[in-house]
Image 1 (cartoon, helix red, strand yellow):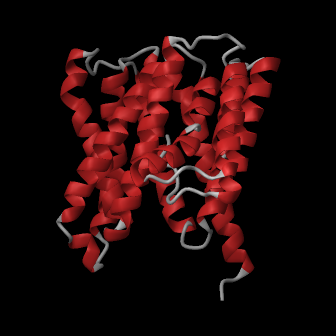
Image 2 (image 1 turned 30 degrees about the vertical axis):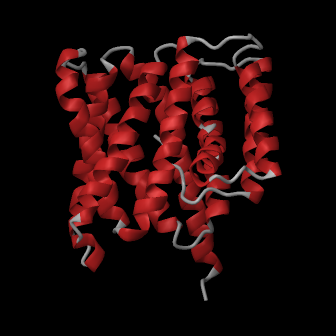
Amino acid sequence: MRRPSSDLLAHLALVGAAFFFGTTFVVVKDAVARAGPVPFLAVRFLIGAAVCWPFATRVSTRRSTDRGVWWAGAVAGTVLCAGYVFQTIGLQYVSSSVSAFITYLLVLIVPLLSAAVLRRPPAAPTVVGIVLAAAGLYLLHGARPSLGKGELLTLGCAVCFAVHIIVLAEYSPRHDSLRLNAVQLAVVGGLCVVPGFFTGGYHFPLSVWFAALYTGVAASALSFGLMVWAQQRVSPSRTALLLMLEPVFAAVAGAVAGDHLGAVGAIGAALILVGVVVAELREPPVVTIPDL
């Protein structure tokens, strides 16, 4: 029987993961204003992979030596790379708070993609959640009938992250989670290295190197480690609900940095959260979110 203190620590671990994920939006937005998005991603994810790899290689389970983890990590990492490229470039055109809330629409996109693949229509709560989130997105954008470049890029990010969740649902049960995470982080960084030379290069100011170090360690390595440990003790539905604190933390961090949503935007953000809650209470995702 699990002790209450263990369950409490697991819940706090997920809150901590959501906090670090949420704070990265402001950090990344500031970094890509001084450096190219692609070279920044290369450095960030290679740092994350370097931090994770020593822990991954110490795993002695049979699954950790399975060569199939390289293929699984390559597929997951490629999709994840596309999502982060969309998100990071999109941050050049939208606020960190707007980016965080649009990104979290992936929780509602997952059941739609699953329905398309499995030929099963989404349940009624999911449909209601999607409608609420769409209304929230409209308000978050300032109640304007069209989406700008930044919003569209971030929507592309949400779709890629949703595909990533489906990919992990297929591969993660077959392989050690620490090894799989290390490989996928290395793939993201590796895919960005060469293009990074042609999209701004690696002559970063010191502040950008600190941003890459923070996001690589706190978001790519530490937060995923907290999630892996906590998910042994917390149900998937509760995990998803706790991770919904991520866009809330992003909004708070944005407000501290002077990046305010405004009254209409705040109502839109609240509607997105309500929509996610409605969908998640009845239809939680198969795996948790791989965010910032």
